[in-house]
Image (cartoon, rainbow, N blue to C red; front, side, top):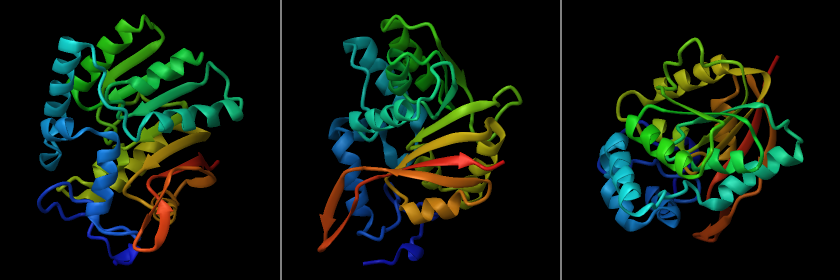
Length: 251
């Protein structure tokens, strides 16, 4: 069983190259992916090739044919967890919220249904944004803004958000075969650009432990809370299947 510090996170290799975690190898981590993504969609998305635009083209076609909005990354409870935290903290309903790597936009839909009115979703994949737009229109919602944007190169107008949410995008960047370590550093820089001082950053990850995320976001952020997530047992050790943290940007 590998120590957390030994993970070869930046080598692409064959397949979805999660490095071995403190609780087991990439096979166990990838098993967690199957708990919230059906085998059929995993095959269609061709995750090993990291071709997310093609993946969302497939999802868009499925939606147009059947009205199926697609998978919810980390499951429905992951959305409930984040929304409950926001409600517990009495985050004003008009607070500006950015969903980083919005995918099918389902999180934004749920936030809108809970009364939040200043919502923005970005994704580098035009197909993902088109899928999100179709789903939002089907729901009859009008208070959600969508943009095709690469978070690693944010435009000047993408700034001043009070809440930033990431459910799996930082993980996907960690799988990038082209200098993932540098891209993670750029992600943190981009986050500092778009998030207001003392704004909140909510991240859910299946590839990083709490301690590793604290290290990744040590520059400019402080941990506020670890949110409860499902646990699993492997090799006699108990751990979280995903990590969900709330950071606040330092003054």
